[in-house]
Image 1: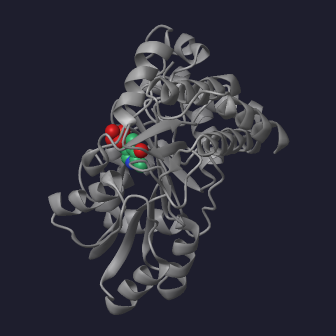
Image 2: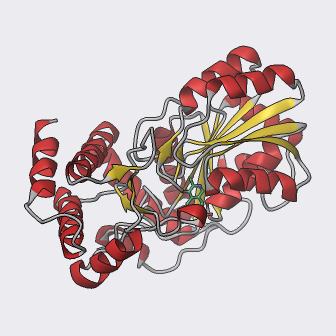
Length: 367
Ligand SMILES: *Cc1c(COP(=O)(O)O)cnc(C)c1O
């Protein structure tokens, strides 16, 4: 069972839809599929404009940074993905100020406010909605609102790769909302999507940069249901399938189910003595801080057929992360907490008594 926070398992009905014969991308047949997918995507993102790019999420991050920053960016680094925004700026010789935090700590509104007020050259802010390195939720909506109060021309670039499709994001003050195929959207890797505000579209049209990632060209093409370069046809067919499924379930229902699973998992693991790592956990994953992370993950993989993720850099061997994104069954999440409790018992850390399962079931069915 694959319960890593990306890539997530691709459902059977999506794999079947993507297994059909190859379509040419410049045909009325594919344009019809593109149009339906685009409409569903605009609903999911809850933004007035959107593009799909044949790229992983990092490409979309790069496109947003280069097309939406003219003078200087603020980048928020509470982990690997936030750090990446800074590296992108550096690679393009774009000036930036990085605000750095521990991987369990959300960005501070005061720090950002102070930075913007003391530096009038700042014209973009880059932040993760959920920083996947530690499963941390940043208060993006509050930050975006505050930034716009101070200077409405600052573009808010939000990496929602592990948040879009997980929870309702208030996009009122967000200018670019990025997502990718292999996380909450349960597709193979290789497709990135970006939602734009009207202000972002205007800025892009006046300031487009680059060639492959020239967002002005993409927006213009995609408004007519085609792409600037060869479309990732198979992935777009898969995206249409998954978005239709999510729409049928109901976006709100999916968000509620995900939140319940995430909360029940955290309640359950806390009840068996484990420590939730981030101070403000996102619902996309549960991150546990433990010195026994590697041993626990090894037992899960070898004895319980369960693959969960570890940590990177200074958190290598110190955390594990369980995915909640996508159409995960409650009994799959229950299996995860049960197996973890058993692993603790095998390691002589805590005797197995079924507490994890009990708390999981009580939590999920009483919420
Ligand atoms: C996975 C992920 C990305 C994108 O990574 P790619 O390997 O380029 O798909 C970016 N940001 C966050 C928060 C992620 O979780």
